Amino acid sequence: MVEVAKKRVLLLTTTTGYQTRAFVEAAERMGLEVAFGSDRCHVLDDPWQDGALALHFEDAVGSAWTIVEYARTHPVSAIVALGDRPTPTAARACRALGLAHHPPEATEVCRDKYRSRERLRDAGLRVPAFSRFPLTADPRNIFPTGKHSVGFPCVLKPLALSGSRGVIRADDPEDAVRAFERIRTLLRSPEVGVLREETSNSIQVEAYVEGDEIAIEALVEDGRLHALAIFDKPEPLVGPFFEETIYVTPSRLAPEAQRNIIETLERAVRALGLWHGPLHAEMRLTAEGPWVMEVAARPIGGLCARALRFRLPSQKEEISLEEVLLRLALRMDLSGLEREPRAAGVMMIPIPEAGVYEETLGVEEARATPGVDSIEITAKAKQKLVPLPEGASYLGFIFARTETPEQVERALCEAHGKLRFVVSAAIPVVR
Picture 1 (tube, rainbow, N blue to C red):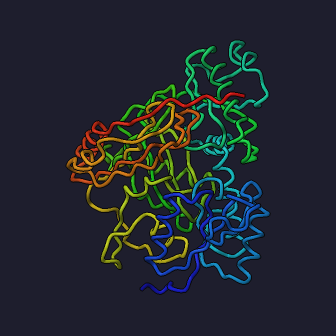
Picture 2 (picture 1 turned 120 degrees about the horizontal axis):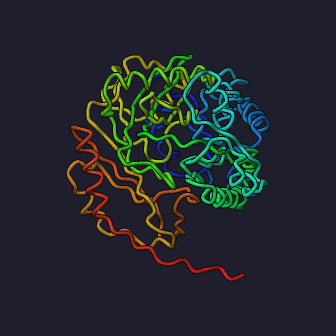
Picture 3 (picture 1 turned 90 degrees about the vertical axis):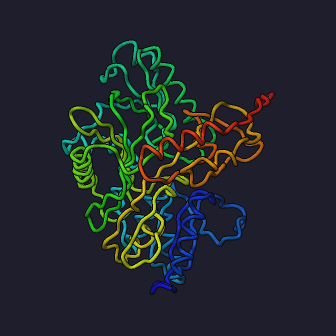
């Protein structure tokens, strides 16, 4: 057992899903005690029986104070935020408790696509031309009249939702009007409205950037960037919606292109003021070089982290990304950390159509595909399926691990081709 056996880590999370379980499992392997902070419910008395602190993530200052009060009687050695919403709370609590984390201001900027674009643009980084409009604006007074300055094609998006949710490409004024109204309906839905996010009061319009898209998983340690993996996204992301499906690492880009990506990300880290913690970034690659599309002060979401395994000289076995991030939060030694030598990847199984999920056929046949590590179907029977741009989930995940990125991509696609999804029509609600 490692030296941190009696230390307590506080996980801030909005769900009890698979990402939370992965962090709990990593903490248990390290001999850590785990506590939870969540905004899941403030009325019932601990309905999940996990002792979670009741927090309001839209009130980062108040939630941080609740954590500080808790820490007076339950000392906390590290705080780790899962997902975007808890990051400002975690940052403020860490600052008050003297724990390592990104600065609160940096986490807040990263959660606002308009403010982050401003910061990156002012630092001289390539970002799309952008503007924002109030949710109450009439799109017919914006696009057909030429009042938006980014031209066509353009991309409309919410300021804070993640996972390409609400992101729509428009090729002409009529497309843009429809996209604006569709995003407005999403932001006014009860599911989003209950989050009480100030960023939900605006819609951003950006110039569309042509080019291949990549993702970077990294960490920042005392202001120094450490890139953990560059993921190729081999499927074209050209719209009208931008559903991510396949991530493969190591990247097949030329070494010089990869150096340019890392150098660009280092500049973005400085511009945003990130200091200590996880980082997930998205870029588009053009002949001019990398364009920064997003830098988030959080790790990759969902089960996707399973595509990453790492080696440390002090450890006999490979460790997960979750363990890496716990060690980072605890300021444990990460010297010599490197990704496993094999190629790896994940497919986020897209929702084929709206309806009610019944079952997935062919799973065992797909699991037998050479190179496939595992398949996790996360959709539950009778769950309502909502595709992008309104949807916020996938049917599940396929993981592959083999000798080359090409083999990984082929294994993911072959396995997906063997799956058959049974979806029934949703029964309309009569009001």
